[in-house]
Amino acid sequence: MDIHVSLFDDNANIRESLGELLRYTKGIFLTGLHADAMSVEDIIALERPQIVLMDIDMPGINGIEAVARIRKAAPGTLVIMLTVFEEAERVYAALQAGAMGYLLKSTPPDALIAAIREAHEGGAPMTPSIARKVLLQLHAPPSASADHGLNAREREVLQCLVDGLSYKMVGDKLGISINTVRSHIKHIYEKLHVRSNTEAVAKTINQRLLG
Image 1 (cartoon, rainbow, N blue to C red):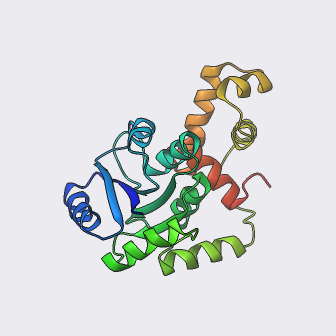
Image 2 (image 1 turned 135 degrees about the vertical axis):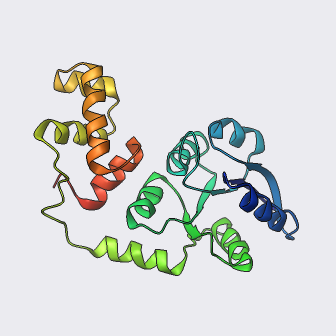
């Protein structure tokens, strides 16, 4: 039975070339090509892919946030990141969000197809250089100096995010308004150099910022 695959990438040339590869590969059924992930939950519900190939840098919401949405809406759908980004922080954030694999766009076509089949069979395909970064990151000692200049209140808010609290719950717990929570989170994003709750939490866990 064919493996149903959906692709998200805002680069038209890459999207079409990968679409051609998938469309004419035996054992693969291409369910759709998408330039953004703004309606990712609706797309997944309609196409019901088994595997999603997801870029990171896309308009609207990025691929890491899209992974988190997919995992929540369709836990059985497997996501492989397919991107140009090699930074350990992005790799870890993607895996933390629920990605089952991480490949660079330089991956040869035959290796990409093999990775799709590997994921479908229960594996977690990664470009070798990415796998090495993950291993190094896992074995790295905590950094005592990497607090990114967070003040005491911002650290409290960040801990609440790590604990999975909503903005309203954070406000209730700390006795501050939702607007104040949003202000603190904006400053946290700026100091951590992230763009979403998912990335902030992943970076916090990865760098052990809260001890």
